[in-house]
Length: 171
Image 1 (cartoon, rainbow, N blue to C red):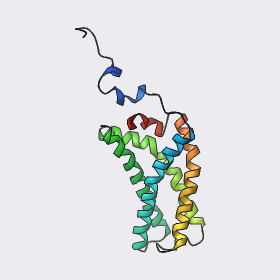
Image 2 (cartoon, rainbow, N blue to C red):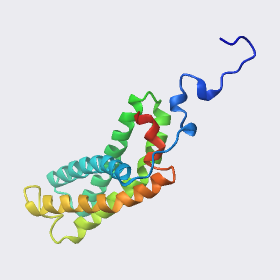
Image 3 (cartoon, rainbow, N blue to C red):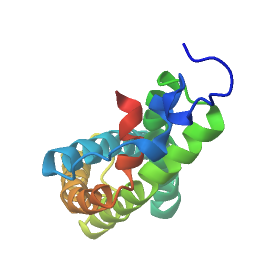
Image 4 (cartoon, rainbow, N blue to C red):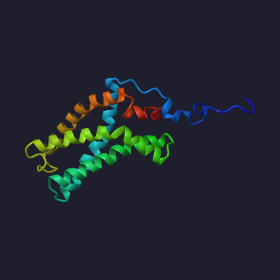
């Protein structure tokens, strides 16, 4: 009930919960890192599987199959993050900037690891969608990607980056 001359500080206005400069980042625990990595893995797995299904149906070879799977992994990884940010009321440009900051390194590492493993397992890329070799190799590659990416995400979150940047918008 102040009158005249009093300026409202930005941290006290109605949008202060979205002022990412004033939030304490989450603690960089293994649980927080695993949760962030699992979120990333979900988008990557959706993109990987969809990309491999499309590429196999079209009879594509390894390189175009991998390029499509990686592109779709990034699309779905970012889309999952954007969904939460849009629900939190953020505008498109802000949400996209935050999603790129939060997920890019995690998705990149995950894609390098899981596609590298798929390429080094003999016959995995050519096994076909009805093959246990293909699905077993893909599951194994995603598990290894999760295990490699989790400590990286823990380190990133501990520095206030990656999923730490969007943590405040999930509450």
